[in-house]
Length: 73
Image 1: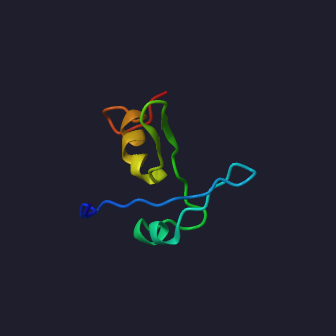
Image 2: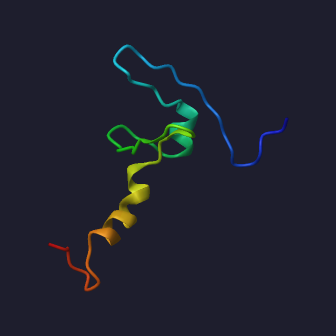
Image 3: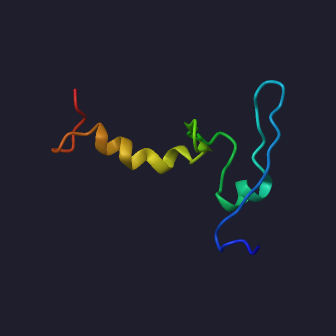
C-alpha cells in the first residue's frame, strides 16, 4: 500500500515516567523545538492527537477577545 502524500506515521515508546520522545523526522518536519508547547487532545474512540500549541493561538485569541479588540472581563 502506497503512503498518501503528506501523510506520515511514527512510533514512540512511553518511558517509566509517561514521557515519549517525538521522532526526529517528525520534529524536523513540524519544526518542533525544545521548549515548544504541544496540546494533547484525546478521544476515547479515536485516540490521541498532538498539535502544536500555537496552532490554536488564533482560536484562543478570538474566543477571549471581545468584538472591539479588547480582552473580555
